[in-house]
Length: 67
Image 1 (cartoon, rainbow, N blue to C red):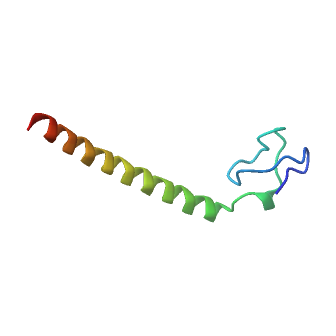
Image 2: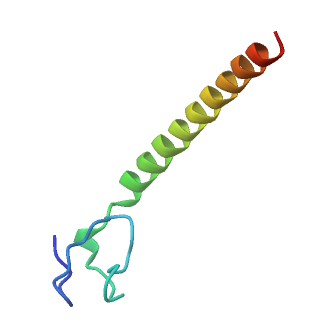
């Protein structure tokens, strides 16, 4: 998809404006509210998993350091 105003490639369907010229993008370029909610939920889940993984790795590292 390209911005109708400046013809730049639209890299994100989450943004309501073109990242190059700042013009509003047509609604058909954007995710629906349902799609946005699903994506946000998936991002939050991945962030939680990542933080849990980091905490486990920190605990292992601390254990090895003080063992």
